[in-house]
Image (cartoon, rainbow, N blue to C red; front, top):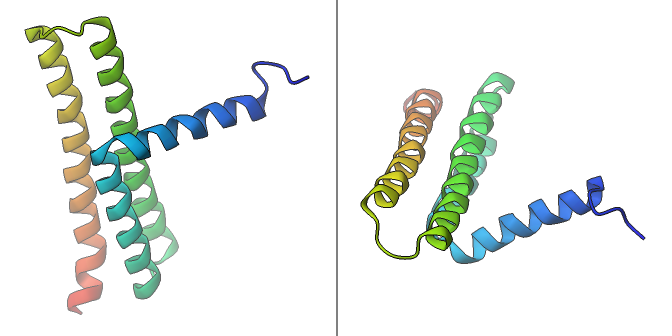
Amino acid sequence: MQRPYSFLNRLRCASSGLVVCLRQDRHIKVHMAAFAVVMAAGILLGLQSWEWVAVLLVSAAVISLELINSALERALDKLHPDHDPLIGQAKDILAGAVLVMAVAAVAIGLLIFLPRISG
């Protein structure tokens, strides 16, 4: 019998959460599609190690923030199913955090990819 908090059990739970979000959340699908395009472009353009580090870090940050956003939105909806202005503001702030990181990721991507494409 497996311990309830074993590493493998935690890994299964984390994987399950990711799959649920991928199936139910439109935004995470957009981020994952963008990630796939960026990975393909990085392979085709032969990114250097430091460029891969930057691209992977910002990509992981955007996807992680989107997962946090989705989890907190679900929790807030469960705790307070009726419309509440403060809950709405909290959800908007969460979305704003994702937007800030996504804009930063695009800027970093442009700094890395544009010189390779235009030069």
